[in-house]
Length: 166
Image (cartoon, rainbow, N blue to C red; front, side, top):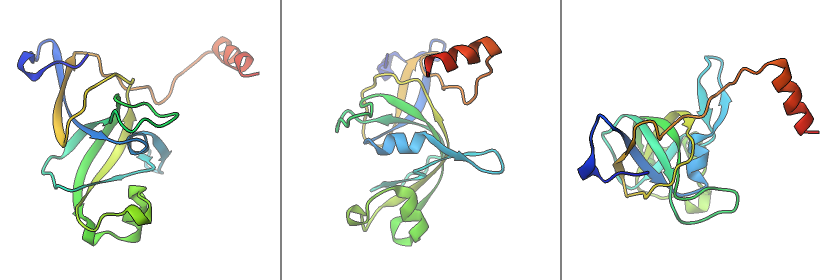
């Protein structure tokens, strides 16, 4: 449950820097698509294009906007963390940079900034009311939880999974 900033108490609340992004881009930023040879995870989308620059560097909680609602995609929820590590002028983009935005060629803006992101980590979805730009999202402690990347199961658990998928 989202908490109004006037009630923020660091003893009982967590505060995250957040950014609301439209679907499907929110999912493309936060779902790990592959792991490189160094063991680092990467998403399909690694550059978010914005009209304004930001000096903020660090973890951002990516949230899906309430609209548009797309089939198979959750709207108005937390999606996951990414690390915002740099920005770049759109006018300086290479073809590889444009590919990393996942924006169709006909829809690409001529002005703006690319926010460079890495290290995607999905979180358990929680309803939120987004805002424009980078904002503080305040929630009760422990409400934002990352999904595990790997899970250990025993032979009985594996058999149960196999039985359910047949």
